[in-house]
Image (cartoon, rainbow, N blue to C red; front, side, top):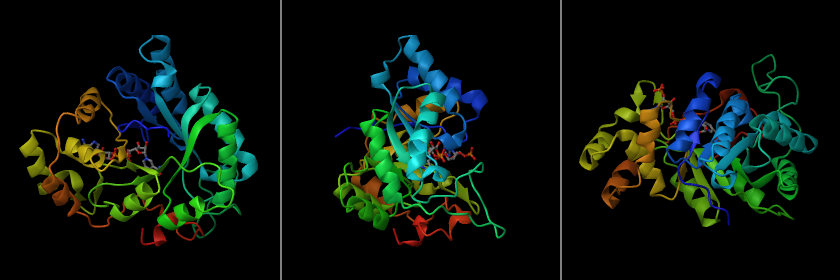
Length: 301
Ligand SMILES: NC(=O)c1ccc[n+]([C@@H]2O[C@H](COP(=O)([O-])OP(=O)(O)OC[C@H]3O[C@@H](n4cnc5c(N)ncnc54)[C@H](OP(=O)(O)O)[C@@H]3O)[C@@H](O)[C@H]2O)c1
C-alpha cells in the first residue's frame, strides 16, 4: 500500500502572493507532502514552487507527495475527469499522488462553488458519492492520480463506501478535522481498523468563543516539560497516534518549527492528558450544507 508522508504542508488560505515562496521554503526544509485543493485557488502558485524545485534538482517529482481534491460541484460522474485534468494543468503536473473527494456532498454544477437557494441553503446535486467514487477509480486507471481518498466522511459513509459492490479501490485516507478538542477517537479507530489512514486537518484547532486550544494550560505544561512549543506538541500528538498531519505554516520559523517533531516522544501519560481535553468541539461545520442528504456531521462520529 502507498504511504503518505506523515507531515505535510497545508495550503488553505495561503495567499497566492505568498504561497509559492512558502512551498519552496518547505521543500528546501524537507517537507515531502503538500496538501492542495482546487477550492483554495492557489494551485498554480503551489505548482510553480514544486516545478522550480524539481528544475533546480532539489527534489525529484517521485519524492514529493502532492494531494489535491475534487470540489463538490463536480461530483457527477461525467465531470470528475475534467475537474481532475483542470487541477493537473493548474498545478502543472502530470499526476497527483492522491486525489480526495473534498466532501461526501455533491452540489449543483455551475459557476458558483457554493450554490445557495433563497433560504441560504446549499443546492445539492442528485449525485451519490458512490458513483463519484467510481469515476475517481477511473482516474487511477488513466494514470492521472496514483491513489484516491476521501475527506469529511463519517463512519457510516465510509462503511457504505467500503461495502460498495464492485469496489475496486479503497480510500487511502480519510482527511478529517482533528485536534485535542475534537480528538476523533472513534472515527480514527474505525478507519485504522479497516486500513484506511487518517489525515488530521486543522491540527491547531483555531479559536472558538474565546477558547483557544493553543492557550490550553495542559499543552503549555507538556510543552515546557519537553522544551518544545505547543504547536510541536499538537503535531507530535497526531504522529504518535499514526495520524498524518497537515498544518498550515506561513513563515520560515513555522516551517522549520513544525519539522522538528521527530526528535522527542510524548509519554503515555502525556498522550492521555491530551486525549482528556476532548470536548467534541467541531470548528469546521459548513452550516450552509446542514440540510444536504449527505451532510456528514449529524452522525455521532
Ligand atoms: N479537507 C478539508 O475539508 C480541509 C478543511 C480544512 C483544512 N484542510 C487542509 O488542512 C490544512 C490545515 O488546516 P488549517 O490551515 O485549517 O488549520 P491549522 O494548520 O490548524 O491552522 C489553523 C489556524 O491556527 C492558527 N495557528 C497557526 N499557527 C499556529 C501555531 N503555531 N499555534 C497555534 N495556532 C496556530 C492560525 O490562526 P490565526 O492566524 O488566526 O492564529 C491558523 O489559521 C489546510 O491548510 C488545508 O490544506 C482541509
